[in-house]
Length: 260
Ligand SMILES: Nc1ncnc2c1ncn2[C@@H]1O[C@H](COP(=O)(O)OP(=O)(O)OP(=O)(O)O)[C@@H](O)[C@H]1O
Ligand SMILES: [Mg+2]
Image (cartoon, rainbow, N blue to C red; front, side):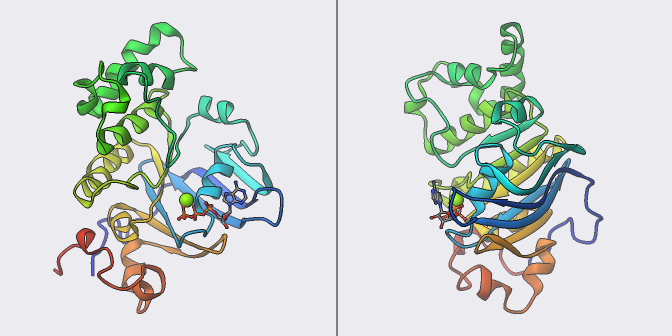
């Protein structure tokens, strides 16, 4: 059973905190009473079946959807229902699953757009800082985004958001459409590195096993509510956990670690 290196350690103090968040699209709430936190340096994985409300939760946390009950706090401040730009200005970075880069523009232009809240004079320095985190982007600055590979696109989408140097990063299925060969390193290397830089990372993933291997904490959502949460290793050690929440064992074979 894979045990996360974080098992047994106390959790980081909350930076991003959802308290009883309820949200939806105008009809019956899609997300109900969700409480979770992510602290600096922590990767919190949110997993759950299709339609569980994971993307809806992220949209509510970043100000795209209205929170109808409950609160969102950032570093102790109540930021519930602030506009997306206001939240971005306070350090919230959000990478949606699709539609996150501008294909006709170059990598450099996409990064510039990500720095839309910054004075122009600050942009070159930030591009340099982002390329220091994702060196692959540094070699592609003049390439049009439409010519990038799937993995490069995802890196650019995250890079755009990094332009504002966010303290909290909310990532919606960053490995979607990536081959297992690219998905593993994106999670284990790049996203882990962002957490190690001190960012609070809320990671929604359909690759539940891979996400749980890199996460410090895992939250299982079912039907709009949190069903279960805990250290990934502890959850995976529960009898039936895999069968109930991860599908048939082996269904994500490429991401499984070999038995130890
Ligand atoms: N724009 C929308 N208007 C109305 N209902 C929506 C809208 N977007 C999503 N929903 C509904 O909200 C529920 C939760 O959807 P959501 O996209 O949050 O799930 P998810 O957990 O992200 O699923 P997946 O793993 O498939 O991405 C679903 O029943 C979905 O049909
Ligand atoms: Mg989704």
